[in-house]
Image (cartoon, rainbow, N blue to C red; front, side, top):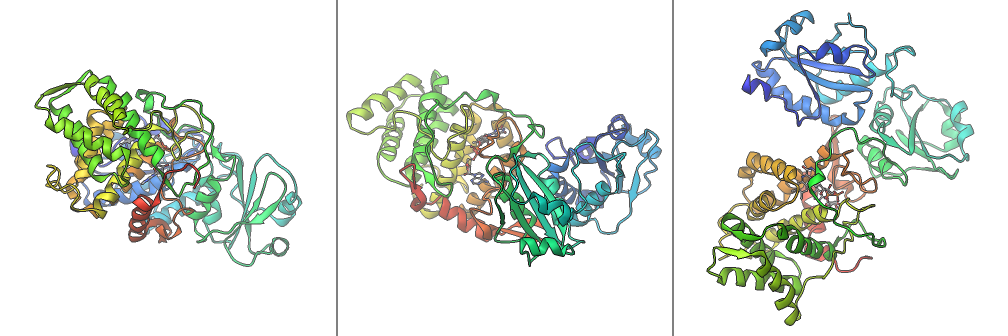
Length: 526
Ligand code: FAD
């Protein structure tokens, strides 16, 4: 059962059903269900699990209207239910309509093609095949609208954006975008067809799919995106002013352990394509004066972790000046002390007083710029810590000899290893540390060089983003989403067989630039 249970885990964005939960879940549900009955000893099911997880991730935002689930028929407690539901082969895919009767044992999907795009399109068809009577509670209309319904809306004011996607009848993009925006308020998406000539005429649309935007103030425009792909449309529409996730349902926030890190300061305009030294300095300020302060003294492993962190920053901080001087002094001091135990107060004295005498000190306050949150308690410190470590991975690649003779040069991923130890030892959010340690234990061995180090952290950060999308720590002004967005790096995004994929080379190029020394901005306005 051990291995069997682990084919899918609670961290996957799908529902793990069992003998006792299947029937109650699918009976009279407000949403439809697509369930994969598998067997954990079936080789094909094991191979297929990564596709199913990617699918579940891809349609995570559709879960209010259709849910993706799995049930393991190899587990003893599921034997009966698999028999009752007539599961003879693995995997078997069954879907259940919304509001299904208790006697409904589901409909088998026999399609030969189990690739993500085909299954996703099946899901759209499942939804669309509902009748008015059993329509899933939260599902918007998926049928096309006509020019008779749409044209009168031009020029009208409204309290939200209206988006018209004009596409070929067999295109799924419009319906997928409608479902992708299901959990977002401030925007409504409708679909129209290329056969509607009066509409094409009025909106002057000649290419498909096309997106037409009706603004709340009554103006209307064609939407230009670099690539006419679902991901580009969705990413743009989700960042329109006033558009935000309407629920915090998809995951639970675990940030309770992190204190508020901001005061109510005036908003500073900033450019999302820059990295701000104010954020990096505030990260260090917070780390030294707040996070460390919860430890009365540093000794043993803690002291070692702290020393390594200070050395890493001293050697890899990309711009000279007070930060580097402070970290160098601190690291010289830590290395010169023969003590096994250093009271926190001694570190604070050094940071506060000795530095000030020599005119070298870190910003005396927290000043978030790129890490400002829309309200107190959002973003701030954790945002700046991610930023700092991304900068350090890029700088490590740019200056490969910087860590020589520090004791860190022997590690194949020194920045990540120091980060792992720092997060595990000091980071105030324990749950975050646990997750990060798990990811590091699973994947850090494979990181062999500085380039992979940059990529690993980027990828890991995106996994955290996707886990946290819609959670309570999600700032509505900075919704968690795959990063960089198409607006920051269009060439980073591609589509293969209808599924979004990253262009890894372009992502790496982008990361080197974005977190490189030349993109660091000392001022809040770029
Ligand atoms: P952040 O995720 O903090 O990102 C900061 C900035 O980095 C973004 O504004 C963007 O410019 C850039 N960025 C975004 N994605 C990427 C990427 N993939 N690669 C490179 N740059 C990127 N919170 C929890 O609730 N649960 C957790 O388990 C959890 N684990 C964490 C683990 C670590 C190691 C850290 C440092 C933080 C963790 N947090 C966790 C906090 C959470 O990830 C965010 O930092 C916090 O919610 C603030 O979010 P943010 O919107 O400022 O963006």
